[in-house]
Amino acid sequence: MLEDAPLSLDGSGGGESLLIAGPPMTGKYALMLRLLVEAGERGVLITTGDPAEQVRADYADIAKVAPESVGVVDCVSKQRGGDLIEDDLVRYASSPKNITDIGMKFTDLYEAFRETDESVAVGINSLSELLMYLDPQDVYQFVRVLTRQTQNEGWTTIAVINSTMHDEQTLHTMYEPFDTVINTREENGARELRVRNRTQAATAWTTF
Image (cartoon, rainbow, N blue to C red; front, side):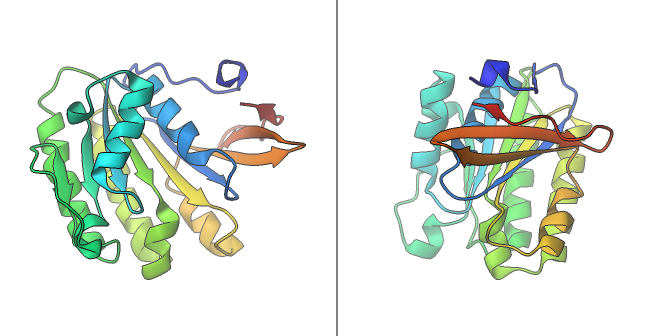
């Protein structure tokens, strides 16, 4: 259970940044959503694979909130020609290739959510989609700027990366901006995680 895992996010405004890294089908996205709900009363998600409507529904199902209260930067619907929601808390980037546009759309929502008195958590799913189109250094700079913004507000940021899609150098470049890295795996039919940061060695693998 997640309650037994060696990490805790209490929404106290610490401005933590976490990267969840693991192979496919090891629960990275679901873990990100659960941690976002634990870390903040409001959620903002950058989605590079699923449309805003789906991401909102996924988050709202766990958080038990209205989907329309969730902020989303949708990086796929315009490129796919999908239906666009007319909503103050949804922004559409032109594609996952346009990281400048993604950053601008996130800043729009950042400014809107700064007005709330509630704690906020930001999710990025996933860095791997961005790395399919962009140089690792460009993605690194994007993450650095975003985490500085969120840290200034005391918001938690949680991103996801598929560890099997990238070489070790790229993975370590992506690890660097984050305070904590959470590795996931499947072992004997059970999903497990371990936690490591700059000051401590990796924890033991724990079922979640």
